Image (cartoon, rainbow, N blue to C red):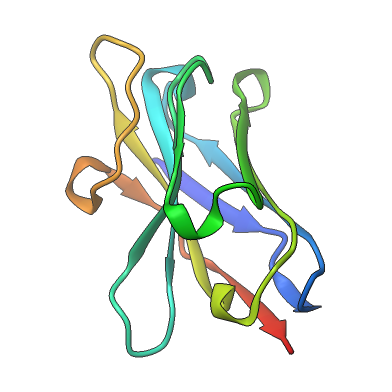
Length: 127
């Protein structure tokens, strides 16, 4: 069965860095666009970043541009999110997601485009 497992979350002070990982199994990883979402208490799940199958195309929500970097290693079936200059407003549960791409080097930014989701990893940024 398909599994997406996030890791790397934790507690960090404002201005610090974390690197999240998402390990995928049970799917042909290179056929899926991948994305990161986050959900803070009392708020809707929010798109953070996405990456196409070849890594040729990436996209970030405005609030994380210049601070976060999404990447993937198809040989390892793993996606990453490097988070630098973290702010308290980045505090949330971070989820990885996989969206099937039949053709084209696409990425997706909407929840409904993703087929599989991980269980999430907590990121807490203190001030």
